[in-house]
Length: 552
Ligand SMILES: Cc1cc2nc3c(=O)[nH]c(=O)nc-3n(C[C@H](O)[C@H](O)[C@H](O)COP(=O)(O)OP(=O)(O)OC[C@H]3O[C@@H](n4cnc5c(N)ncnc54)[C@H](O)[C@@H]3O)c2cc1C
Image (tube, rainbow, N blue to C red; front, side, top):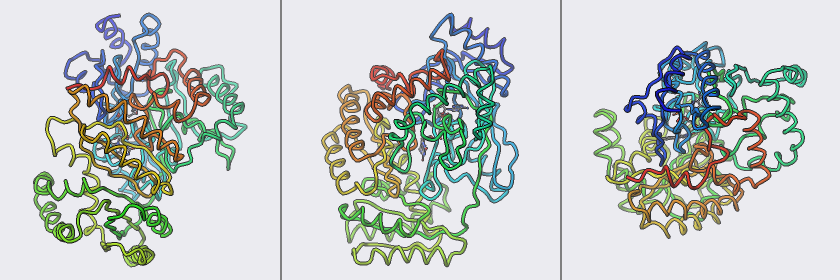
């Protein structure tokens, strides 16, 4: 079926626009991953009814031409290739961007609402969604739920899945459904429905019951995971509730498209103090992490010597980009660290443990207690007694990706080992092996390591010249070696950024064939025609990685 014919069918079916314009397709052909996929069309549904009509029309067209498929896109900031397709993109940001009710402890939202706007609305009630990602200024709720996003406060508060209460979805036959926690009696009622929704409940219940032991054995052992389908999260062991919203969260638009979400919120603590640790010797890192975690920091982040050096070097450029007032303070404030580097050398890792409490005195006391707990380790430490003082560390941590990106031209950011998680206890064994491995390939890229040190989640996003075949080959050589190390330590390939094009082929390595066959069955139950975002979560191949990787 050619694009014009399909465009006519879809235009007829929905109230929103459908376009084949080059600029719209080009924009939708990229996210922040290594990939490019040019869609045939971009559709802009106006409401949930439009999403239903779009899905139905796609399903019918797919019967005639299997290349007609649909991928959801909200903010388009995915690092894994999640929203990319050669079929049709359903763009939620243009019209489906309304906030619903914000209550005493929850908010209702459409997927196209950017997090920055969502938070503006929730802060009016003094509340936030604490699992917001570092990309909070550019990401939308669609992908925050779609990827089961997490961020700097996840250590203290958990991932998005924990806050997802109810999800309105459109199923693969175009029918609407609402997924939320069901009691055993409510589940039995749902199973009686003679619709796709009823069939999904019947078949998923059987799948979970027959494979309960296998699924439990593969429940991720680390504190955060976005790999695979979260089959272990559907049944709540404490209440017995059955909740398919937990499965849709993090499923990258491969099982259903969501149109409205109800998320619970928290009241953030008002005051923060930060313990900064300049670490020159990695062997004591696990001991530091163990002792600091005992004091219950709200976040525990880190960045490495490469980031630190880049920050000191590129501060003038960052200053001008950030606006003068904020920038001038950052520049002046950074002078003590520059002096510190001059005397003690660049630390291998800079650790930031932030403590949040209702009063500044309580926050300070916690930071001091953590510093005290490390005393015998003779570390270089510093306490920043309020958020204003600790802001410069946060800016460098949050900007570490951009810092690297701005530092060299002709190079592309290459997220391919960008989000693995290992248990913090494994650091003494794991980190030297990781550094040694990466250094074997370091002539092919420059890199920084930043991450959520408290939860063992590392972000390594190298800069590479992707026009060179030998550099692109490194992605295929290094990633499996890193993942082998990660898996040996009991870790996972992705804590927050998800599988997408780049990691789906590694799911058998992480979960094994039996579990992957359950993922395939799950996909088959929800989307028997395979119209939702094929090749992500199940069925992705290394050939696709090779084919669609940016080569310029
Ligand atoms: C600098 C930078 C920092 C980042 N930091 C983090 C971080 O700290 N934590 C983190 O988790 N991620 C991070 N990311 C990755 C990404 O920004 C987040 O995962 C974000 O939540 C994606 O939101 P989005 O709306 O941009 O998603 P999109 O790119 O639009 O989509 C992401 C996935 O969700 C699916 N999806 C979108 N809308 C829907 C819908 N309505 N129904 C069903 N599926 C849908 C898409 O198909 C896709 O598979 C970062 C990215 C960048 C560039």
